[in-house]
Length: 219
Figure 1 (cartoon, helix red, strand yellow):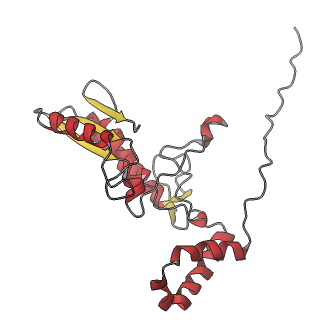
Figure 2 (cartoon, rainbow, N blue to C red; figure 1 turned 90 degrees about the vertical axis):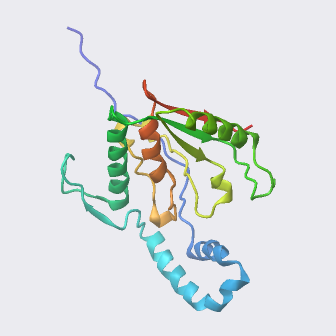
């Protein structure tokens, strides 16, 4: 019987460099968020906040509030982000809604255009208008619930952000979690990720014989 060649460990490819910024750079960048002269009266208080923010960053406080994972996890005592657990619970509730045969059929309309009439263009997008027409038609059909997601809120609404997927699954499947555990990352200031709210809305309408999601991309 031929001898088997020992399997080599996969090569981990690194080398993009140290992303840690010096304290002076960190403080300068965070100060830019308080550029408006209206903040000058609170300058000393802002300095105190920046002091705390620097410590949070330098100590990498990714998930500062955690609790035991609980039942259903391989290690129920493992400390897990309370925000991640809340999103997971919301997804589970949406899945139950999706699977309920007595519930109405559900359509999620997604307007993918970044244009919004309250920002620079001053006029709504054709994509939004098309989605609005579709929403009106679908809403008039008995037995349908219509959810409308306007992604132009990312450019027009304060605190609305969706962080990019890092494609963890392309390195190893176990690294990719549902919902995504990359965000929020409080140490890096990557917070207010809108996906925490959007995951359940997508699950409640994900496609089968009664539900559908429709994306209308922006031009």
